[in-house]
Image (tube, rainbow, N blue to C red; front, side, top):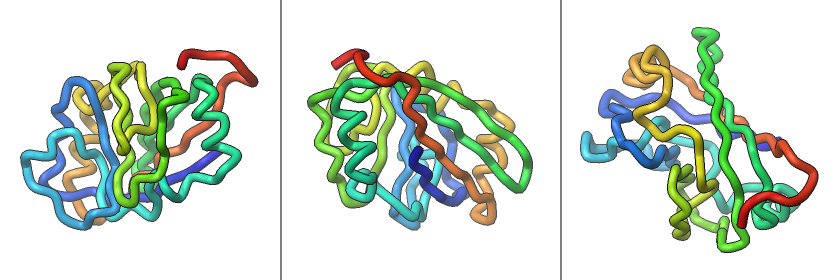
Length: 145
């Protein structure tokens, strides 16, 4: 299990149809319509090595998006890939497609930014809102690559 803690931002719209992103950056523009959290405490570079190994095996993972102050959560699944680099210094991106770039955490996700519970998205428009992203492996082996 791996957790990322981030915060909301007034420019979060979560309208992107194929990805969502959490970033260590403190500021984002309205153009970043895939972003659901800023000022993250971790990026891909910070994932523990044992989790990176599971991701690179192509295992299926569950991702929970949780707002502790509101008791709101949303859940999705996606897959790792042998093509992942997992070393980006600021960003974490989950994709519905199979596209992989240095910012990619998971592919073949069941949700993108626009699919996330809209009540959660509304709360994420406030900088005081904390969001916790939890990544859990769902398989012991196998999966897509």
